[in-house]
Length: 132
Image 1 (cartoon, rainbow, N blue to C red):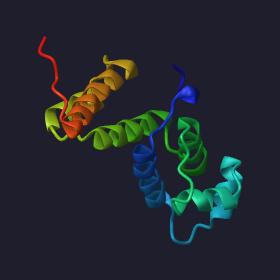
Image 2 (image 1 turned 180 degrees about the vertical axis):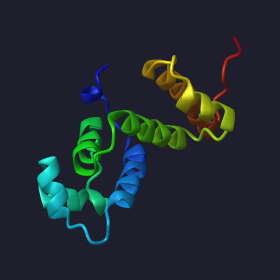
Image 3 (image 1 turned 120 degrees about the vertical axis):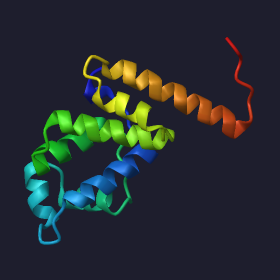
Image 4 (image 1 turned 60 degrees about the vertical axis):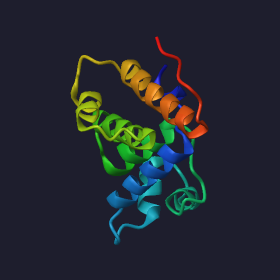
């Protein structure tokens, strides 16, 4: 799956918007970022005020890459960190593994996150997890 086809959950989107807001200097008008990204000032304002939470990976990548010159590798790391946070993965060893093992593909990392989210969902619904 290419990054353009990736979807971002609302919770991950909120985490990413908080990160984006940290990159915006108090003296930097949204108009300046809008020119760099190709998005309108109004659209960026809706995003930074949490009135709109985009579902497309591409939106966050464009804002961070074009708007703030963050490398695509760093953007992937930021998004992976947001997914880890949203999944509730608190074990430092697993977090480190998901962030730092270069031989692990994005799909493999996503599979691990998906497994944690499934366990979290089943625990919330009090559903028994079958033993293998």
